[in-house]
Length: 135
Image (tube, rainbow, N blue to C red; front, top):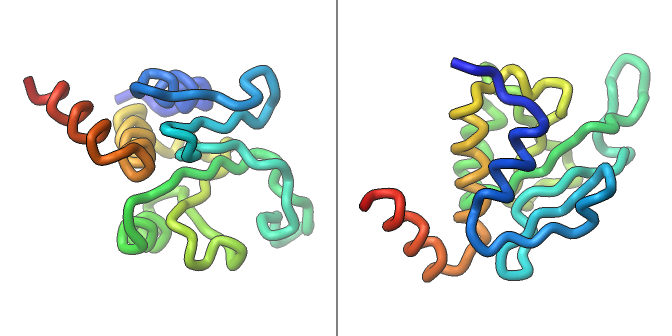
């Protein structure tokens, strides 16, 4: 089972249908479907920082989730590297430091990316993509 890498986030997001990328040449691209973001790479922000040094994390990736329960399942499971901050309370998303992405397998990352896309795609697009996978 291969460990996930940062490049996989980009490749998996781009492999989903109807995806557009904002700022693809920059360090912090935003992946969207139907004008709705489903993954984005954050700039360092005051809400995500190293508790020992106070240094802001410069490698945070945001993934949308379908429901609050999905978020809770990911962030409360200590075996996953996902987390959240008070800034994201009430926001259907989870955070992941790029430096910890290798704690996920490629398949686990693929599921998170696909779920993020499904959480933001229109119902028709979601159904079409899901049916194309079962045919």
